[in-house]
Length: 411
Image (cartoon, rainbow, N blue to C red; front, side, top):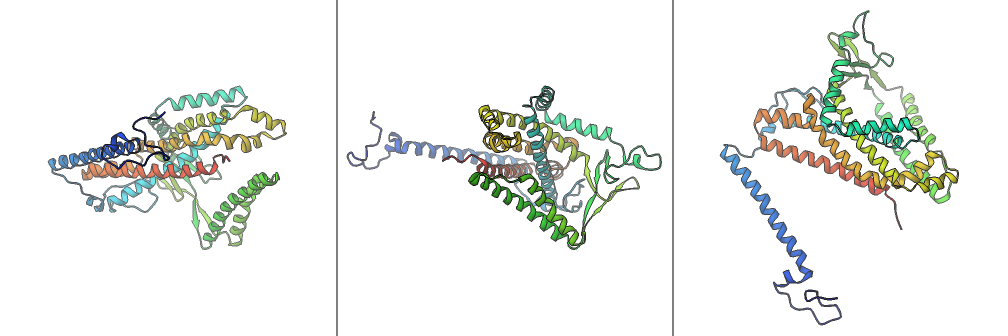
C-alpha cells in the first residue's frame, strides 16, 4: 500500500525537482531533517552550559586556567608507582593518582573475575552446601553498598593485624610467613622486591615470549582439533612452555634476578615492597563486591546453554572439564561478556571511593588536595571527568575486541 508521501517507484515517472517542502513531507529527507534539528539544539544547549559557566566564574572573579598544573604540589602521596616528592608539580601528582587508579582497576578486575567465575560455577554445583554458601556470598555482597565493605575491610586490617613492633625481640608475638619473607602488619603487607642484575632483561624477554608462545600453541591446538579431531594435552604443554624456557634462561644467565627481603629496622620494616593496607582494603572490597555481580552473569550465561548439549556431550564420553571448555563456555561467553564489561566499568568508577580510607587515587590527588589548594574546582572536575571517560572508553574498547574474538562465528 502506498501513500502520498512515499517516493515514486524506480520504474514510475521521473522524480520531482527538489523543494524545501520535501524536507518534511518526503520520507527520504524527513529523518535527516529531524536529526539536523536535534544536532543544532544539542550544540546550542552545550554552548549555553559553557557560556553560563564562564559567566558565573567571571562573577566570582575567576577564569578557566590550567596553569596551576605547573605549580608545586606541596603534599605527600603515601604510595607511588613512579618517583614523586612534594616539590613536584600538581600535574605529576595527578599522574601519580591516575596510575594508582589504574593499578586498583587492573588488580580489581582480575580478582573480581576469578571470584565471579568461581562463585558462578560453584553456585550451580550439585553439592547443596557449596551452592548455598555461594548464594549467601552473592546475596550479602551485592546488596550492601561497596563503601561499607571498603570501610569494614580497612578497619579489620588496621585492628586485627599486628603492629611492626610485634615482630621485634625474642618474645615477639608475630612472625613472618613463607620462610620469613612476608610480613602482614596493620601498615600493610611487606613482600620481597625483585633485584634486577645484568642479564635479567634476557630472562624477562624469554618469559614474555613464552606467554606469547602459549597463546600461539593454544590457537594451533584449537585449529587442529576443529580440522582433524586430534586432541592435544593443552594444559601440560602450556605449563611446560610457561616454566621451562624461563627457568633455562634464568640458570644459563647465572641467576641474574634476586630478591630483596623486608627486614625489621627501627620502628618499621625496611626493604622489599610495601603494599599499603589502604590499597589492599580497596582492592579486595571492590573485587568481592563486583565478583558477586559477575557470578550472576556467569551463572546466567551457563544456564542459557541448553542442558541437552551437556547430556549429549556426556553421552559421547567427554569429560566434564572438556564439556565446559569446548561446549558450554564458548556459547556462554556471548551472554557473559557484555554485562561483565559494565561491571569492569563500575569497578573502575567505584575506585573513586578510595578517599574514604585515605588512598590517594586520581580523585584523592586531583579532585582532593589539588582542588582544595588551588581552588580551581571547575578545571579539576573537568579533568576528572575527562580522565575517567578515557579510562572507561579504553576498557570498553578492549573488552569489545575480546568479545568479537570469542563470539560464535555463524555462517
